[in-house]
Length: 462
Ligand code: ACK
Image 1 (cartoon, rainbow, N blue to C red):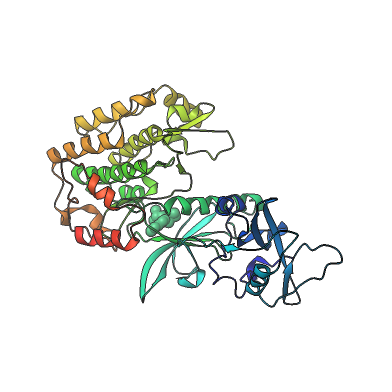
Image 2 (image 1 turned 30 degrees about the vertical axis):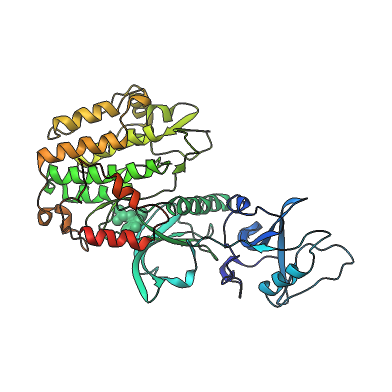
């Protein structure tokens, strides 16, 4: 049975806690632990259509995925044995209730509906106008400004990342259905990574709506847009002290992510956003990875999506590609270069091969003349061949904080980013005790804290 993806909203199922929307199979498998654990999800079938699937854990047969078929408005199990009476139901919840009391097969019965996580929200809570609210577009997704109903009559401004639903919606007609599906899965991976993080210098996820296509990522709205565009526009109006504040805030965001075992893998000025209060927020977790346990490094095969070359560390160019906290640190020094160079990337017109050769040999470009000597020294310690010789973000934060104390940042009302519509910086830097040792603040921001607490934190800080 296939439901056209454009009319894939299935009455009665989206309100059920055991409905996980368009989560891919590999995302839900680990949730089904005991015999009889089940959930319902939607999955791409052939030809861009959507199928409704009942996934169940069986002690004897392992994981089972059954298609739910709908004919003439009645639901039934897609696969039934010959000659067996087929039970049909008006809704999927009625079907589920039935198979909680009656066996599906010899031994299998539905026992525990596994609830979806809180960050899986429904489309009805999110509004945006595709004609008026576009903020920008990427290969497979477009970002809009929108509103999110958090409940308790709280409606907040948000940025909504919309994954193109099919090859027809995609900007590029040459994209295959598989590519579109891979992009959607990447978006869900991005949202899952973001769901772990609550920090003042990391973009906040409100939720993902994947109850039916298109998949939406709903996140904190940053009216200042991306850091690279701001640098390119405001150019020489930005004092060095203000630039150092951007660099320190990005480093603090990265220190938090690394403390949560997240390797970003795509750190660059284009992926830093400017919040309403004029703070830098690390965003775009599409390529990020959570490291297992104590692992410091991830080795990746050739199939993995490639990170833009100019920000790559030498070890990420070799085969097998290696990404680690230390390769993020390398990219961070490229971000420093961008911030000091008015948002221009290194070697703007060079061919890829020549850039790669330079990176492999650690022959990196010079920083702007106005760069404080201690910052030049720091970048020199980062752009080294041996990744274990590079400083950590904890050390980097400390160093930048010391440089900032000497340079003296401007008063908040003199920050150039106040010229951005919707942005108002009212404090120079957030308070941090002991020479930037803000461990305490980080530990207040544990993932089990609510989003609200971080937002209030920001308000109090201001
Ligand atoms: O550089 P921009 O103005 O900032 O254009 C890009 C565009 O969407 C495509 O990525 C903007 N964007 C992305 N996420 C957000 C967000 N959370 N708040 C505001 N703008 C965003 C980005």
